[in-house]
Image (cartoon, rainbow, N blue to C red):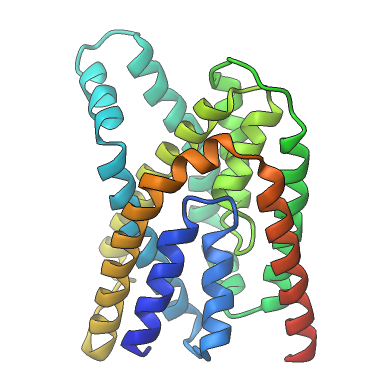
Length: 265
């Protein structure tokens, strides 16, 4: 992979991670446009590296929230912080199940199937449209909601299904306040990403050598810096602006991707 291409893809990941437009889908589209012919394993590895970078940027932006949660856990009381942590754990279960038992099948979708990405973006658009019609509430994420949102997160492991879009939309459709839904969405993915990195390190799946190390390192830095900027000024956009704008965007990009996929098989 070329270093410049890696930087471009890193910027794409950093900017799209915090918007409901599918960062993984945009990465696959970016790879196709840039002519990246990496094998599936390498392609998925690079995607994981970039997600790791944006997870770090999430930690930086939400450092106060994360510190409060950790501090609450060490009080050994069934308080709001410990309950929130329990909900995060519950939300992780579906994605952990898919990652453990369907990893090979999941990897097969990261091989540049642009038509598939396009169709998934269209599904994301539909989901965002219906979520936009939901009424505003002041409800928090319940334990039941956490598991259902976790199922959405597992489905969103497919490229083209926006993780933040799916989880925020699902929460909103369940009656959760949009601001609380966004906060839960961004925090719930952090343990999963670090768990994925740890699993791959222990299994030896992540091997960095030669020129790819330089490209992946450049992509990591680009994604981290872009993620910091995007999360700082875009998170309010995700929480407050109408999801229909993102639905229109995903629909347009999805249709273009489907057309591109059929005309460039």
